[in-house]
Image (cartoon, rainbow, N blue to C red; front, side, top):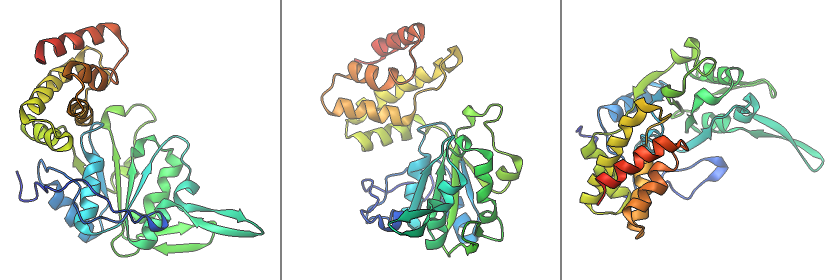
Length: 283
């Protein structure tokens, strides 16, 4: 484990959401490093380099960004990307208020104007014609042209662009163009080792260590069903959800069925196989 490996405080992003920005609170969002990702991210921030986070759903990418915003003391803007996301949704648009027409910055523009971290979550889901709007911010220019206002916005000091996606979802048109990918420093994420994952589950849910270990052991067995048609294996996020149910006095097998198995599939054969694993693994 690296020197940057942990903070022991509970998650907290401060209550100040002025102008759509989330400012870090006094406590660090809990994050356990698995390698040198913190040092690499800090260097990228200091050098003005954008970062791409690659990894499965629920493995800690968003928590990592929140943790880094706290470490760097920068406000954070998060955008959940989707098929209908337009360039105007990112940059801004004119709105009619009473008898006036006013310009409203979008989240990308706010982040660039205020020197915030801008996190585009699951960028792969956005349309290609939307993604290209970020290109001028990802090279030495660090500018955002606002065609509707004629402004060429220079990114304020501290601005950093961060994108994430799940490589397992890439297919056909759901991929980033090389012209976009090669603008970013890539950080690879995976599920933590069983020891670290148990520590995360214990901290996030408050359950006993032995129960956290048992849930992680079960989940790693469930992940082996990925080659039997399971579209997506259970994430650390799902283990934490199950553990929180257990902490709330839900019986452990019922918690596993509700939080670990139910969200993964409706296939009766896969569910039967997973139910057998729960029965054989959990006391």
